[in-house]
Length: 515
Image (cartoon, rainbow, N blue to C red; front, side):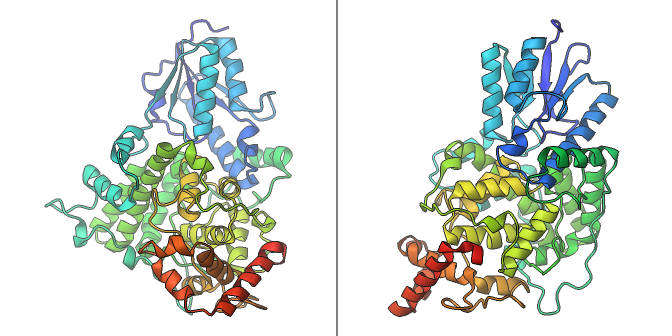
């Protein structure tokens, strides 16, 4: 029994930064770090093997780094203890060691933060939760920004963050290039010729620790969906820095123009592939932003690419984190559109005839990755228009992506993709038919469905569900200036056409396994 222990420093699986605020004032003679691998973190949603593997591998590498720094560590390894949850494991540790306090950085998951607080209260051990300085806006700062507002707009927050942190501003304090947002220049498609030769992302072959993790994932979670056979993600800070340097040098230049584009059998294109490293805290957002801006100032990349990239990190990423804590726990229960259909089973297998869904889901199950437009305008768009219950869609997104931590996944899925929180922080539902997919990709080539066909045989499910969504929510959409054109276009169809589209949609919902 360690009666003299001062602080038990709890480190969760997405807090793998050596500069974490949890380590401030750490004294190896009095304090101890505590980490635990537990089944619940892979089973409260049925995480794919790839997602489980990246967390476990990164955690074990981080634990090794802490030990090499001489920091006392209690690490509960999967399969070596009887505890199925973080709460149960921590309760046992507190009963054995009786530290004077538990110290931790703010969690990225409301459920976990509540569980740890409950365990500490029950054990009568003070819990000291420190602001997560990884983020550029604190929870309190965002709450102040949101105070008194019925609706939040990311663009206003983004500009505020640009000014506060002096990012992409000229000497007079105005935005570089004379405008805050170059989104209009970030929507390019490849055209019929496709992307051509693409710079390959760096490869990170599994080392001994990762190979051990992959074997244990097969042992403990072999019945989970997806595969970890192609595991190739950064799991250490050193690897994450290599990934950052590679993106800045070889893909940032074309990232902006083509960030919304998609292409068959090309899962990565010009994307950064840095979100898992950022969300595990292997990278700091400041260094990522600084590297991109410095490359632009050196004249190596266009402004629209750098601004689009900075907007994702300094704008959208920070905004989503703020929204999550602003709206929890209500956000997890939101269902403003009253959608209650089950998620089609092929979301878990990729066994579907729609080529756009087959591409996006297939690469997700193989690699644990899909870029933001595949998530928003393919898998998310279909779930929205089909009318899937938000809780089921949320569980899927949290389960399948290597960068999925609830603070970022839940508001993106429930709030943005599904419009389930109404207009609290997005300006419209992101619904589109097959025409959008055809414009932004070559997914429609060779597909059994025709994107322009709205009903009957050969009708594109994306298109059918889009028009059905517009019809079902016509009143809401006609009262929104950003979506009123949807309803005006719907009104061009005769009553007979609308009835036939509805019959086709009903038939597809009745037998989604045939899609």
